[in-house]
Structure formats: structure tokens, C-alpha cells
Amino acid sequence: LLFFVKLYCISQQQLLRHTEHKAKSNQSIESVIMLDASAPAPAKSAFMWFKEIYSTCLLVFCSVVVITTMFQMNTTLSTQSGWIALGIFLISLYWLSMVEGGQASLVGLPPVDQNMYKESHPMAFRIMSTIKEGDCLDRYLMGRQFLVLALVFVENLCAHAIDPEKKILGMPLIVNKMFIDTGLGVFFMTAMIGKISAQVNASRCMLDYVNNYFAYFTMQVARIIEVSGLLHCCYPVQMIFAKLSGQPLVSKEAPRTTGQNVFFWLRVLISTAILMFSFAVTLSALFNGQTTMWAGVPEWLTVVLFFSFMSVVGMLEGMQIAFFAVAQMRKEDLEVSPWAKKTVNVLFAKEGRNIPAFMIGRQMCVTLCFFIIARVTTVKLKDNDDNIFGVSVGAQKFFETGLLGALITTIVASIAWQLVASAFPLAFLSTPLTYVLLQFCLGLEWTGLC
Image 1 (cartoon, rainbow, N blue to C red):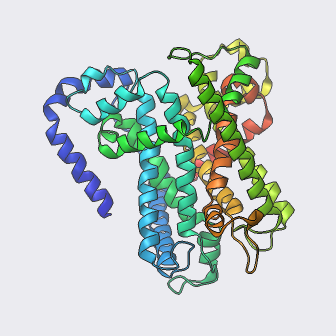
Image 2 (image 1 turned 45 degrees about the horizontal axis):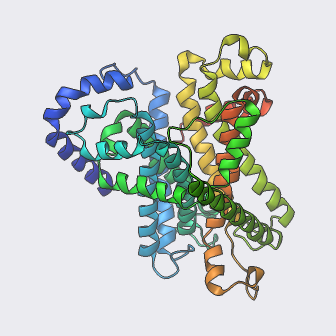
């Protein structure tokens, strides 16, 4: 509550400070980004009020349960102090909200003339001046994808219970099973606070959301991740699918020099080697039962679940890209495939309201899959187990952060599928699984959980 009060106070201070400039520019900016703030909100039904109330109560309850578990020193990062785990968790959650909201702002603002907000929103102007340079936006989006996964995996370390049978505030053990052992408690907190609300607010307040130093810092961190070459093995994949689809890659920058080409392909090789090593460590831990996977699940089933949930994440990531691409296609092209036609008819039904509903349901489903993958891939040795591949204690501790799983998920379950969908959007929609996932996401949003 204090966080939201502080955020409100900051926003009010910014509003008072920039009122004069905004009065001159807001009308033009809103006409460019097509936001009709004056449109009356539709009347809420009783069912909508019910969903909003129980969703809020669910968020409060999950927050109490998760934070109590931390102060019971019953999570991976709270063994020494609950305050440490809570601090890291809140920082990760706030940072995640900036990453998700920042994406909505940075993708939506390029069409807007920067001179309109140069004086009223100086930090937003500074950020967009950087983003508009060459292919900087594409590099930022790639880097922020890993940042999202890394923060989710850190949250999982903060909230994952060591002893799931330890009662919380004297409540029945069923509460532990439902919200702590399954990870639903931290999932609801992340989905509602760190993801969906951040994206919705940023889409309506693009300039204000990134008009601060933390947004600038987040943007630069995402760029550094991309420049490091950690994700460079994705670029050959992009080149291959662009060639297969007959769509040439268009760059806003001059062709690379010989030195730049050498540096580029060197990072591609290093990135590929890191990815292969990450797979080797993760699969070794999975087959030996050395992860935080739920007790009683066979090793072979754990591996199957790992690849299955990565495939679901990949489908959902690709569907988002394919849906935006298909909106610009001719009706005749869509009628070639009955499944594509059926999917598009559902997507654009209800006067287009299914599109935002899908985006919310998709975000819920993706976030839940992220936490399940984090649970499956985070390394945790049993008593008297040797370090994986005989590495040092420091390296083993690094394996146990879950960042290797985050890297695998970012490349294999996210970016690669997005590249496939951008190259072959119609083929991506021409599968029954796409239609099933669309209906599932719409049903998830209809529940009102988030």
C-alpha cells in the first residue's frame, strides 16, 4: 500500500510540474497514439464487480501467505532473514513491472513526435532518443526478454517453500498445497502487480511511465544484456527463417564492417556454447532428480514437462506475433486454412474485445508456465550429492540460482518461437493447438482471477 501511495504522490508531483507543457501537447499526442481518454467507460455488470472484488481479495490473501512464508524463514532465500528475502522479492517485482510497462511505452511511443514532450517529459525524451537510433528497439526487446525471465526466477527463489508442510498462520495444510507448494501465490502476485497492471497502466500513460531514471536504467540494462552476446545465437535463427520465408531482413543501420562481423559471429559462437552447456547442466540435474521439482514426480516425466511447458510458452509467444501480423492480411489469404479462419473469427469477435482479453489471458498463462519451468529447472542437490560435472562450489551455487533455466527458456521457448511466427504467421495460425490455446486464454481472462 505504501508503494502505491508513494507512486501516486510522485505521479501527482510530475503532473503539477508539467501541467503547463502538457496542456499544450497532450491533445496532439493523444491523437497520434489514438487514446480516447474522454470516452465514457461502459457500465459494469454485477458479475464484473464480483470478479474485481474477489480478484483483489485473492491478491491480498496471496500476498499475506507468501510474505508470511518468507518470515517463517521457510524459503530458499529467507533461511538467514525474512527481511532479505522480502526485500529482494519486492525489488524484483517492482523491476519486473518497469520492464513490462516499459516495453508497452517504448513500443508505442516511436510514432509520436518527440518535440511534443521534450520539455514536459525530459527522461522519456532521453530514452526515446536512444531507442530510435538504428535497430536499438529490436536489441532492447531481445535483452528485456531475458531480464523478465531472470526476475521471475529470482522471485521463485524468494517464495519457494523449503518445507511445504509448515503451517501458515495456523491455517489448514490445504492452503500450503494450493498457494505455496504449487506456486500459485507468487504467480498471482507477479501476474497482477508485476505484469498485467503494469502493461495496462503503461499503455494508457506511456510518457509518464518511462519519465524517470529507473526506466532509463532498465532500458540500458536490457541493452547491455543484448550487447553481451548472451542471446546472439538467436540471430542465425532469424536469418534462416527470413530466408525460408523470402522476407529480407531490413536494418536501419549501415552494413557491418569486417571487424564488426568478426565480433558478431564470435558472440554467436559463445552464445551457442553457453546455451549447450546450460542444456547439459539442466538435463543432467533433471535426469538425476536434482531440481526443485515436486517430490514423487519421476525424472522422465520431469523432462517431458520441461519441454511441454516450454512449447506452450513458445506457442503463446508466437501467437501474439502472428495475431498482429494476421490483422494486416487479406480475408482471402485467411480462408486457405480452416483453422486459421476459425481462430481469427474468434479473435476479432465481440467488436474486437477478444484481443485485449486474449492478451491478459495469455500473460496469465505465460507467467504460470514461467514459474513451473523455474520450479522444474532450478538446480538443488540432495544431501551428499557431488557437484554437477565436478564444478567448484561457487559454480554450483550459480547453477542453483536458476539462471541457466532462464536462459534456455528465453532463447528456446520465447525468442525462437517469435521469429518463426514473424516469418510464417499464417502457418502458425493453421494448427488446432493455436485455436485451443486462444480459447483457453479467453476462458482464463473470463474467470476474473487477475
